[in-house]
Length: 256
Ligand code: MG
Image: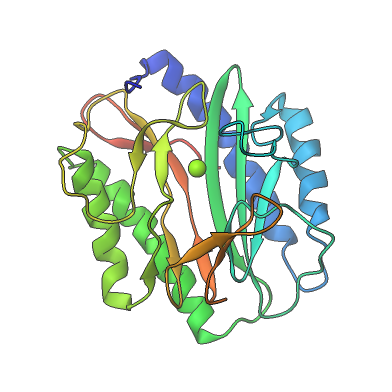
């Protein structure tokens, strides 16, 4: 499948889709505290999207016939859950960390972003994990502004994580975004052996580093979706959708 570059008009619509995602995530971030039920997030997303006129990108999503359709409008992944956590009737506890990953479709275009939020006071490892992962996201975004090829972005993400000694998850990563949530190209969070496609105006990608406090090995839970660390270690995920605009600057579409 070829990469579909977006026109300035399409990017303007995608900024609106992204803004809805960013604003909703800020609402959710403010809700995170010990005692909150993970199902609450789902309810607030439904309310916010209805108000904004956006469609829930995640609900019903299936990457192929072997996957059950995704049953919620958000991914809520707690502690050793890395990504694609189906929100459950679960009360967040002091010391947990929770990743909230959200997609909105607005006027036919998708915005996709994720944050990881500490629940009350968390230990130093959790704090550092969140710092390193968010920094890696911004390293990738900054690299997109000077990158010639996709490989330059991938290298910048890896280089931002590597000195921490944390695990860099392979097999999951960022992706092109447009009318579909997942378009070409795949955006690995580690160095790649080829240059990859050129970074040029009209390219819209989600950058989403995934970092573990222990081994980076993962498996998928029996629910068919929730990805967890094999060793049960804490893990973290941040994501923004960005567009390369004329002049080569990255525009972060999913800021509130
Ligand atoms: Mg994504």
